[in-house]
Length: 180
Ligand SMILES: [Cu+2]
Ligand SMILES: [Zn+2]
Image 1 (cartoon, rainbow, N blue to C red):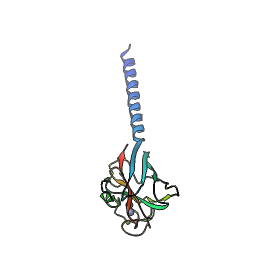
Image 2: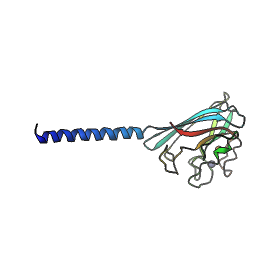
Image 3: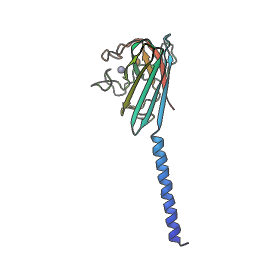
Image 4: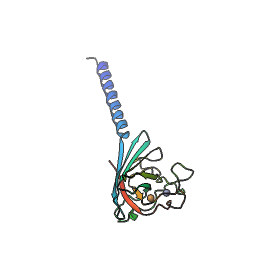
């Protein structure tokens, strides 16, 4: 074989190898996932699951709670991924990396953890979803990264105005957000 032929083949294989590597990397970057398993707090019967997936810089959250009383319950991201306290206070306050006032999701001013209220039916089950570019999973941008925080479900309703946490009452469910 001519040396130029060998060089051409090597170069072509090299490019294919690089491309497949980029492609794998791209797919990996597109399949970031995280989860928070909600456990009961403050003597409640609340359980649940919150899943997060990130694709092309957009995070989709799907939350399900069970065993809650019918009506609206506040759901937030709190700053510490620590659910060890029986009343959930170990999770700290609302995750507020941008230093804004507490408020309504996508309103003029709101904490990045102000998801809102989850509507629970007569069967004790409620669902809420969010799609946002404001979060990321493990990107290490402190203004966006939800890993190491906690999901908190409250006994009451978030009024979106009382500072610093919407007067949502006791913490009846908690789950640390962990990479999956
Ligand atoms: Cu909260
Ligand atoms: Zn808040």
